[in-house]
Structure formats: structure tokens, C-alpha cells
Image (cartoon, rainbow over all chains, first blue to last red; front, side, top):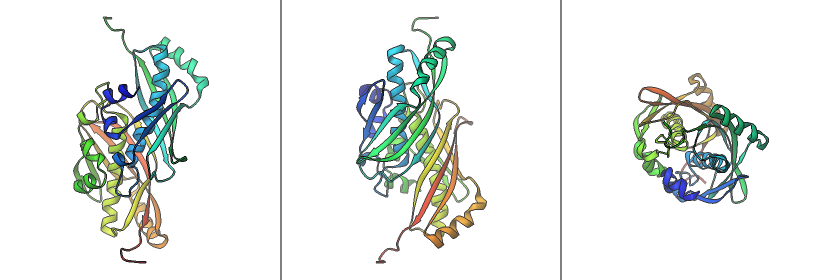
Length: 148
Length: 148
């Protein structure tokens, strides 16, 4: 998963994104303060937002890989609350917002080639929750390779 | 303004952020596709979100500089809609969400040392609106330098 992120979204290398774990239940990513610092010695909001998006995206991506790989997964809408300043290295934990919606999502994707699902992330810094994020994602089935 | 962003939020250099203009009415920032690309050859959502935050933050920052400089300005909450894939270099235009709220914001900041205001950004790519962002920001007056 780390190699996937660093190769496919090069900016994640610069953000210093590391994958702590990426499973169907949750994806845990981390990033250092240093690469993402602002002039208040806290994490820049855009970097916090980026890690939150990646964690939420990753948990859907991992689940989709178990199902089928040729899917395009993009973010459609997001909300984020920056609850506390992020003063050190930080972690994002991404999970599906409602795991009971997964079977319907997969069924719709299979039938219509396109389906929506929500995932959320919480951001932690030194064991304290510092932000929360919710994102709506759209998955689109891509044509099979070699198909015309 | 460009020097300020690049020096104070170093990740903006890597994102390739440029300041087209930064005035009290609006702040216009741009960034290239290349530094922010994902595996779909479009802009990574976290990069789009970062430029949107910076444009909204900048327009409040520029206004605050006209008023007083020793203010800490942080994002508290944001929503973003990713309306279309961003397939080329892109621009964010940040404005206050409601300019008539500025005088009350400044008065509250002056009286209580802390006040909230909203700003929004639209993202454009090849003359088409591709995303919109709204952010709630909090300004906090910092102690004067040398004060104890």
C-alpha cells in the first residue's frame, strides 16, 4: 500500500506519508510534523486534510481490491473539523462510515458500473483526537484491459 | 505573499503554489498538475483541498494585515465539493463568504481577542469550475512583541 501511494500519488512522498496498516477494517497512515509544518509550528491544514483523505480513500481501496481491481475511486465531497492544533507527528485512521452499506455498494457498482460510499477519518496526535473528516467517494468500474 | 507562503508553509513550495494576486477583495493562487498528480492523471484531492484552504486563508490574512499584523489565523472547519476531475494546472480564487461580516469580525477580534469568519474558494481548471470550498476560520490576537 505504501509503495502504491508513493508511486501513484508522488506528493505523498513529500508529505512523508507512511502506512501503519491497511486492512479492510481500517487504514492507518502517519505523517511527520516537519514536512507539513506551518508558521505556527503546527501542521498545515492542507496536509492534515490530505492525510485524512488518503486514510479514508485507502480503506475503500483495500476493500475494492479484494473484490475487483479495475475501479477508479474518487472523492466527491468532504467535511473536516480541525479540533485542535496538531503540534507533532500525526496519524489518520480511516474507516467506512457505515460498514452495513458495503454489500449494497458492491452490488450497485457491479450492476451499474458506478456507486457511492462514505468513509471517515479521525486524526490523532500524541494520543489525542485533533481532527475528524468525512468523505463521500464514487467508485467507477473501468473497462477490462484489452476490451474494446 | 508568495514569499510568505513559501517561507512559512514549506510544503507550498513542493505543491508548486504561485500567487497570481492577493488583495483584500480576493486572493488568486495557482498550482501545476505535475506536482500534484495522482494515478488517474488528475489532481490529488488533498492538493486541491490545500490550494483551496490557502486561497481562503490568504484573503483573510491580507485583510488582517491592513488592520493589524499580530494575529494567528487558523482553519476550524471546512467543506469541499470536488465537482469535476482536475486534468491540468489549476487556480483557486478565495473570497470572504460575506463581506458585510468583516466590520463585526474586526470589532469582536479587537474586543475579545478572538473572532470567527468564513471564506470560500472556487477552483478553476481551463476556465471551468472544478471544485468549491467553504472554510470557517478563527483569528486570535497575539500578545504584542515585547509585552509580558
